[in-house]
Length: 354
Image 1 (cartoon, rainbow, N blue to C red):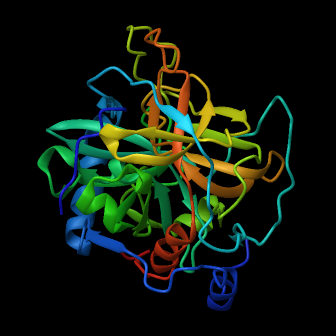
Image 2 (image 1 turned 180 degrees about the vertical axis):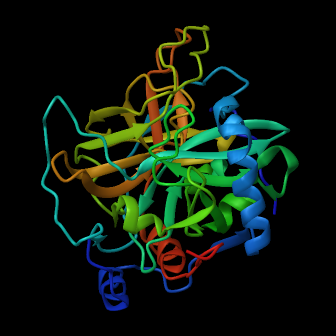
């Protein structure tokens, strides 16, 4: 595989539900790629112990996976062309959330940080648990899974920690087993496909000795999934921003999750450097660390559930004042749904005995 360094920085779901919910997918032969993260129980346990060692010191030292260059001004124009009929997969429990415009938003239990080692440094991105057959799936950005600097390897020691807070892992550590992404991201460095779905092993808890704490979706739930939707629908974008703006201003600590709310533009955003031709844009001042975080439509603040319809990919500076004022996401279409479907039906299992 070839990658490019990003310069921007409940009821069980039956197999029949997944099949029915994804029947609107247009492309029969999706372009997909998959890579192992921790391919054995022994390696997965080693990864979990690495992050938990010395009272989670590695987690505490981690910082946002931040860019090394100023954000460009993303050009806009045109519109979106869905590649098939709209479709949805309901969240865990099959509740159908209704939109909430409450100012005090209850943060979803599903969101957290993905931690990994990049170039010897402890880093994080944002992510969410998403509905799947085995309740073991995480949605994030593809550049938060692959080590673009090494031009071909997955990021080292990859884990998801939902609800992470200052060294606390309230629902355990979930080690990544297998990553699914679009072939065009792997081979052509195409950030129109900057999304990934990662199967994770059962969580590991260390607070009272090593133990299996169960499946991710059983512990925190899983957001729904939707594709080929109108871009005018309101969304909540969640994430853990931390890195400074290009001018050095640092408004976020990265300690607690934040959110943006709004209606994405009906126009596409373009960036030649990342081969972006069709990103969705949302105005807001998030900074890196929030990348990989979910964009949720029909989000219910009461149920803390919605439908993932994007993930934060790029950060733009539209007025060129060295402050981020735009985040973008790949448009989730039928190809995205095909890749999700593959990942959502893959079992992972336990690392240790319960």
